[in-house]
Image (tube, rainbow, N blue to C red):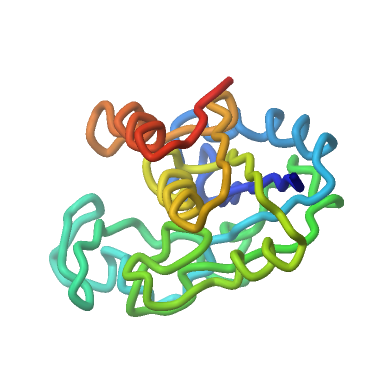
Length: 200
């Protein structure tokens, strides 16, 4: 059984002081660094949005972050502008030990559809290439840490289960947005129900 570590969106804009800061988001970095040394194969995902991304509240007149609209037929939470391609906010955290990352998977690159999962956009219309990469390296087991529990971590883990991977999420190594109180706990329960191993 070959194993991989997935580092989900550990980017400056999701850290304290960032454009879409996840509370306590920087707490995932030491956990990620500790795990990186234990895995032969490490992949990171990055939100990599164009300036005009449809998930940005600034693109919709009179709408505020946190509101939900319909974007190309899908419910879409509106967010502050974040992780815009080639900006400091989109870069991986400075403290993250990036030397052992084999590959970075960019997601959210299509302005018309958001992409929480590391595998697909939110409509499962296009794949990111992550599944093909893992298959090429005969990976069966995935361990996931990163941001945020209730969005990109959750949807990556659920897609991984649907694709047949054994998935473990390390609770010390994830933090959530919690737009609604309890979202992160509900996300962990949803992942557990899908067969994800939740451990600390």
